[in-house]
Image 1 (cartoon, one colour):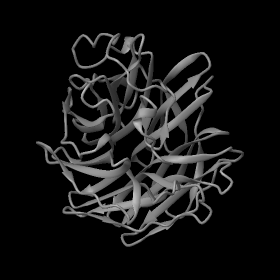
Image 2: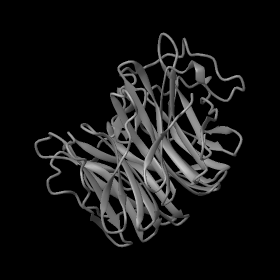
Image 3: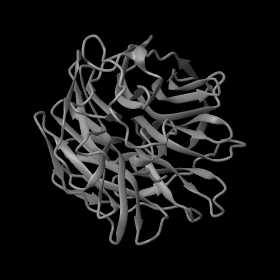
Length: 406
C-alpha cells in the first residue's frame, strides 16, 4: 500500500505506481505543441494517458483529472482534465506549470460544477524530484496555483477536499531527511498555507493519501505510516478540527504481516466516515481488501469480501452519498476491476465490466452524487495499445463502461 517515490515513475497514483514510464529525469526537448487555446497539451499529441481522480456534484456534473504522456524521444507528463455531463466525457484543457518538465494531477474536489480544485506535483530544472502544485476550475478554464513549499524534496499533494470555492484542504507527503513525511495545506480562496501535520511516535514514513471534509472545522485524512526501520506499513487517520490535526487510532488486521494502508476515505458527516485499502498476507502471496468505519469516536474494521478466485486485490477509493450508502472500487490480480457497496451493515461485491481486450485495468477513484449515480475512473492497457483512460458509471443496478476521448 505504500506510495512509492516519484523518481520510480513519471506517473504515480495513490497507492499504486503505474508502469507507463520507469525512468526519471525527463527532458523538455521533444515535447509536443500545446493546444491551440494555450490551455494544455493538444490531445492528439498524447501517446498515453490515465485518469486518477474524480469528483461529482450531480449525476450530470463530474470532473476527472490525471496525466497525459507525450513527446519524443522522451515522454513528458502533462495535466489531463475531463468533464462528464451525464452522457459523454469532454476534454477540458489544463495548463502545464510554467517551466515544468513533467506534471501530474492526482486528485480533484468540486464544491460546485463551476468550482473545482485539483492537486498534484510537477518537476522543473530547480526541483527535478517534484514540488506540489494545484489548479482551480471556474467553470470555463483551469488556472495554475503554486502553493508554498512544505520543505524537503520530492513533495506531492495526493488528496484534496473542498467544502466551498474558498475552503479546501489538501494532503500529501514530502521527503525530509530521507523519510516520507505527511503534510497538509489549506486554501482560503486566495492562497494556500502549510499546516503542521503530526506523525505517530517513532515514524520514519508517513503519507496521507486522501481526505474528506464535511465543513471548515471537520476533515478526515487517511493513509499509512511506518515506525523505525520496519518496512511494514500501518493504517493512519488524522482529523482536522479547523485549528489543528489530531491522530485518531486505527486498527490493523491481525494477519497484515506485510503492511496495511487505507488510501481512500469518505465522510457523510463528522460522525460517519469510511476508509478503504488493503493489506498483505503473512506469506506475501496476495493482497486482501480492508475497510474501516468511523462513528465519531473510534475506528473499527468492517469485514470486506475479496473477489472470488482473485490472486490478490485492494480497494483504492470510496465515496459515500449517505452513512449507509457507500461505493468502493479496486483492482485484483485475478479478476480485474471490482467494486464493493456498503449498506450500513455489510459490504457486497458489485461486478465491474473489464474493458474489452485489456490485459491490465485499474480503478483509482470513485465519486457518487447519489446512491444510483457513481462514476469511477482509472486506466487500461493491452498488448496492442498503450495505457489509456477508462471510466465507468453506476446507475444503482450495474456498472457500464463510458468512452473517454483524448
